[in-house]
Length: 292
Image 1 (tube, rainbow, N blue to C red):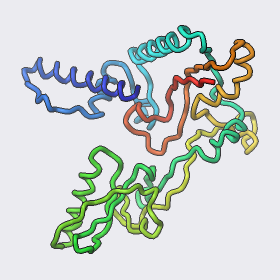
Image 2: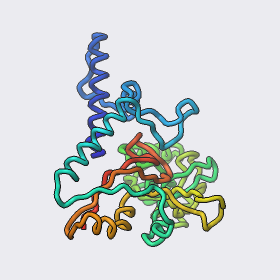
Image 3: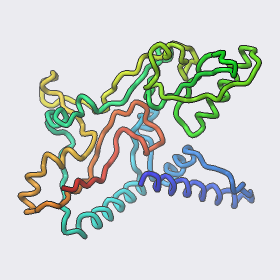
Image 4: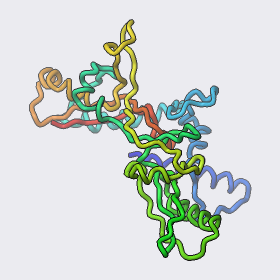
């Protein structure tokens, strides 16, 4: 679904650019590609999606839906609910609360295990997901190691790593042929080797901290007291609300297995590095079915 939405947005961006070029008498190269900035620009100009808190320089990972965006979302949810719930005899609906007992998340393993590996740059204070940061050894054919390079995950990261390796070779004034740079996740990097890996922000080796688990659930406090007993979480997924309401739904709907429970609702994940516009954000909506 995300891929289809992204493709549609890209097509919209391309169509708008082509129309503007046509009006100006410019012929576009058919091989011209459109980047994420073009998609974001179209979504804003057409009133689909705005950066949240834009007048205060924005708030990373959060977005507001404009006049057309909110109608598009409503249409998608209405059609999905019609086809997945109303037109089926084995499906019922549910709308569970965003905040629930923290015991639910402890029992499901989210409190202990719903996390991503994270590393910090001690120089720039930037944070990275360790499974989205890659490193590689720069080595000559004769086995001499010149150092290490690091790149962030992208479609061009191999080219970026090769260019960085070539630059390192020229600065070291070395002769010979470089071996291909083999990229690996920093999350899997041995600690003794991590000390040699440069930060992508500063290029300084040894400035990355060892990977550690970062829990993705947003914490909040419920009630007048702010202590451990009042800690609760914004749900990171809608499935648990379905699971804990299974008995209530089965009894009241007089459903017999097999049957399904559908839900549309907000979920929240404190992503270390939100990116790709609305395709990886910290607040989003899910349309989900759990089938029993």
